[in-house]
Image (cartoon, rainbow, N blue to C red; front, side):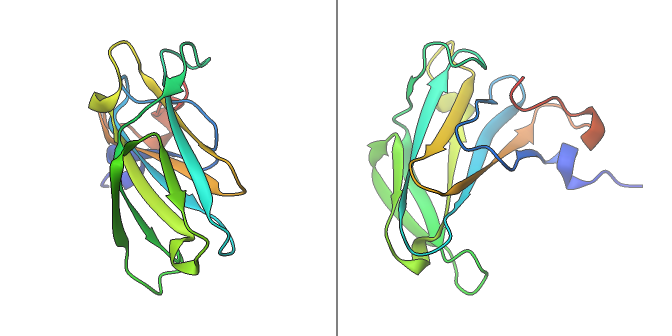
Length: 146
């Protein structure tokens, strides 16, 4: 029997709004998948810290591109670029209800291992740790905030 993608390719934290995710010790990076019901727009702020308690928390000014769409499968992703920033801002348009952006472990400052994304509105945030250092059965994956 082949190993499922969960544990081989990625781990996930579906309720990751404002939650510290361990990047350096578990995966090469985190893909954030965000969604806001209704065309209201949202701001997602990315921070880094040295531990799961948020020690030394500061903005991670590293996001230069992200993708948006309606999130219901009816349209393709639109690539959006910006000067390096710690925020992703989606417009009040249905075509920007969903946003995806990535944080690479190499983008964190030396000594920083944790990253989090916080929505300033009612957006949901799902963190997908990807390119796992060690493939495991899902029940043997470490907690993403550990």
